[in-house]
Length: 165
Image 1 (cartoon, rainbow, N blue to C red):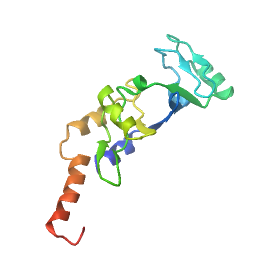
Image 2 (cartoon, rainbow, N blue to C red):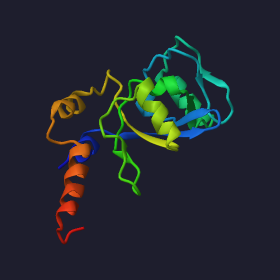
Image 3 (cartoon, helix red, strand yellow):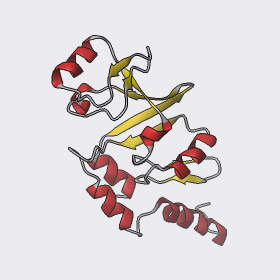
C-alpha cells in the first residue's frame, strides 16, 4: 500500500469545487455539528448567511439547515489553508506532480494548483477535534513512500532500454 491508499483507508475525503465565487464544499450536518464558525458561513447557492461568526452549529440548527435545503457551503482560498490533500494531484500527460496525498495546503502550494487548472481539490476530512492527523503525520515523516519517488523510479527504468517502456 502506498501513502494515498493508506490515507483513503483511514480518512474520508471532502471535495472542494472551484467556481467564480470561490470554493463549494458539501454541507454534511452530521460531520459539521458542534463546529464553531470563525467567520460567517454562507450557503453557496444563495449567498445567505447560514451560521453567524462565533456561533456553534448545534444538532438542531444543522437539522434545520438540512431541511431548508442547504446542500453546499461557500469557502474561500484561506479556508483551505491548513487542510491536507487526499490524493496525488498531477498532470497525466506530462507526469508533473503538483501535490502528493497528505501534503498540507498553504498559501504557496494553493496558487500553483489553481494556476494549473485544478477546479476540484480532494481534501482529507481532518478537523483536529474529532479526527486528528496522526496517520497523515506519520506518513509525512516516512521518506520511503513518496509519489515523487514512485514516479521517478517508474520513469527512470524507461531510459535503460527495458521492454516496459
